[in-house]
Length: 323
Image 1 (tube, rainbow, N blue to C red):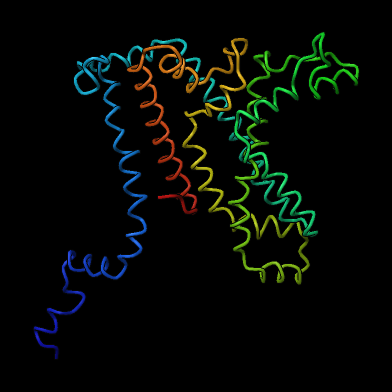
Image 2 (cartoon, rainbow, N blue to C red):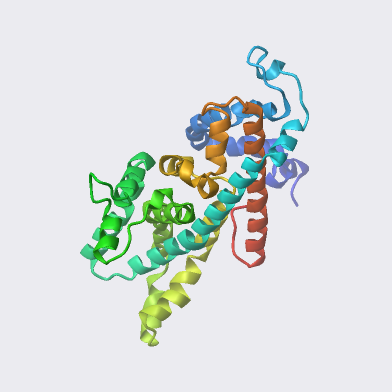
């Protein structure tokens, strides 16, 4: 029979603080490596959150953020009553739904199709070509889009796309000044630029699948399509679920760099999104910092709610989420 002193010294009888100290002594070096990143996150991510109070104040540069008088929820009321905000919110959601419906599914399909390539050199060339656009900034990539979609003028024949249209007997289209086409241009250009990088996550998940599963399926007479549907796709489903949740997190947030470098006054009705509208009323010449802060706060809170709901739904489907 164990003595009382032995029981007192047993791991089960240790306090939570003692267990914590023992754990930190064992893994201190790992946490030391994490410490610089943690400090940077606290300083630059959490430390700047004091600016959120601008959404509830009438900001005065002389008084500063802390000294400005409180305004309650008046800026949120102005936001709801602003027709330009409603238009920008609508455009943001529609464009992101397009990207989710077409871009997200394309990324998964792209990874599956490239994985089915059997000639290693061809597969490497395709992967490199698909990855390359991601490493270009949106300034450069938007310039390429403008060159390809350029409308013919007296000085030149226009971009490649319009040259093809004219050669086929059609009428050239001024793509970047057509409100009805602008959302599609944003969606397609985003897919071309980001598909390769997004597919890397699925390639990593595919690499972790046990090869014996494919060998057993081949012995049983399964073809490549059956293996892709019944082996590959189910085993990368957790990665697909995580990527879907992360995509939904940006449902109310638009890519400012992409839209700002492509849009113009001609397409404001369908191309003006929240990020460009917030920029115009604040740093882009306006002084409505309180209203822009209120918009950012609401959009980020809505994104958080969407992420939590999506994670809960995915967990009910018996797929691991991000929480």
